[in-house]
Length: 209
Image (cartoon, rainbow, N blue to C red):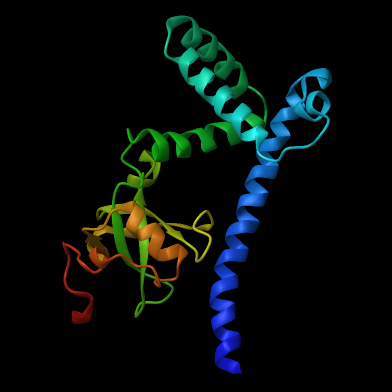
């Protein structure tokens, strides 16, 4: 009886979590319909609620925004709006930080989150996956040796984690993509790609110390 129960759980747990995430995502996107005038909302026009229509509106808004930002007028408007936004107390600081992270992850133009490292954490005899980020110039001046900034994500939620400065000589650079590393972290190593075990060491082997 126990093995049948476990088999059932293996089927329903991933399915249930997937459906929950989809329901949460669709429900959140459906909130964009509230931006429409009340007489234009699908619930009012069709006389019934159809889940997921907010996804269409979201895609249209995002697409039109991207199209607008591709011309001179859109860039001019955005430049002045963003400048005003950065001068708003507290909100400006949050916006600037979030924008730097999103630019790095989505545009691919930055150097942050481009390398996957092994660092000693949470104690000298353990190693954790980490992403190399940028070190502020003011911090670099405080070190005699070469240091790198790393973000160590938590499992299974990689959006949370720890930000450290570690000596570059104490890290190991891996020949692993960010996507593979994230997949390994989210799945707690269960869904680790076959390539995840291949790495390029620029420092001594961790077994040597």
